[in-house]
Length: 196
Image (cartoon, rainbow, N blue to C red):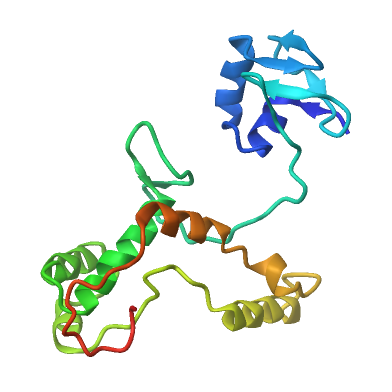
């Protein structure tokens, strides 16, 4: 199937569509050995040899959709040249929360952040009562996600139930954990069970 080059380059994970357009305009993209500089050029990833800076790009075998609550002010990328908050920072935030959960020195700072962003209605709840535990490695509760999938089908918001590997793709979490390194608890004396 013929698709626009910028879409193919984006789907292969080389660059965003806009960045792919720039690569094409700079003459860094070839199709079957011919340099392409015209926007809107189409190619078939199954038949054509598409290269960016001499490196062949592969067609994506299967699209993956990731369900993620992304708060305002975050961008969906692993790194950002404009230094905006990214989805990787969300996992970093969970780890900071887990450190505070166990009584690390950042506890008051996290309480202030949770109250200021209205994540928690009152400071008293965080100072007096136990916090809900989180996974510092972003692991997803598969059974819970499958229950949600069943509820969507039952509520006629989805046509079918999907197997776990279609509903949950933890590869982005694995990449985030690899980038951040293993979670190490600061307060080694903490006896709290969660956030480990």
